[in-house]
Length: 233
Image (cartoon, rainbow, N blue to C red; front, side, top):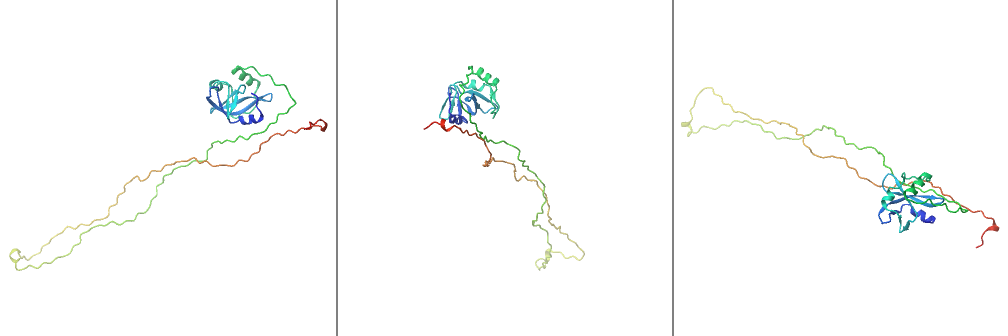
């Protein structure tokens, strides 16, 4: 499949599906042979990225459809995540053997230069940012309260003996004594340990935008042509 530079740019991040329409993953990198795009690595969510050929592939509506089934692509030779080093001769031979392809003949050399550029690939990584700890300490505090208490209060009652009572009451001269039990309350303090609250740690994931400033390089090609050899428009 011959692709223009714009089409090659658009391949990055496109969905990849097999010939039956089953989704395989997304395009992560594009490799070229003799200056022409030939292979793509497919990000499938695993640790490595299997390679798929661009020959007989089709690009429609942001999806790259390869001419093989999903199992064949997933079991193909792979590269590490984010690897953009050129393919070795051994890797290329393994790919041709896996897909049962004949090595392509290099296109006829032309008077051309390949312009390259760097692309910024930004991601995130998780790292420790400290830890939250729950501590339980014992704090003593003073409690002031008022408790009502009772006690017996004694007073003397005097009741005259009337003429009607003389017959029922004997008068005796002599010493005598009577006792009355007295009662008094006093505060009593007891302490109960009572559960009053559950306390636990919880966390939420908060997404915030963080600016990134980086430099990327690209190549520019200028032609120096003698005036007499310039094509006239």
